[in-house]
Length: 126
Picture 1 (cartoon, rainbow, N blue to C red):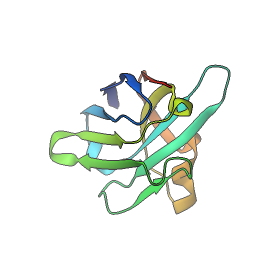
Picture 2: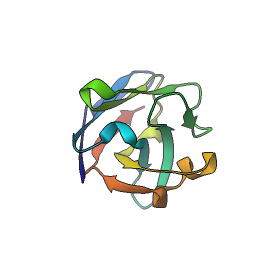
Picture 3: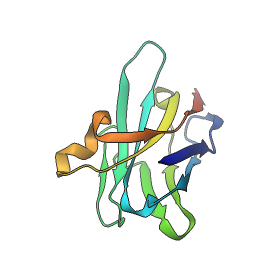
């Protein structure tokens, strides 16, 4: 079992930055890939970014490719999402998730992740 807790969300103006953290407890966190997904009111949960267990492979949604950076610190069981140049359309509840995707395409799909955090609100004002 892996327990995940997100932190670092909040309210920021457009153009600002936030860094989300996903802290994990439980066994073998470093063996799992971690993804960030977000869900805006009335919309489906969307893929944002993910990182392989070693950190050697990262994947991004087109909408955040040049603005967000995912990284991980396995020694401290934490994954980060640095979000720069935030836009109002980035407003959502952000969830981190851990899983074991097999193929590169798997990293983009929520169903490939087994453990989920409760989520944290990010609000970007215009």
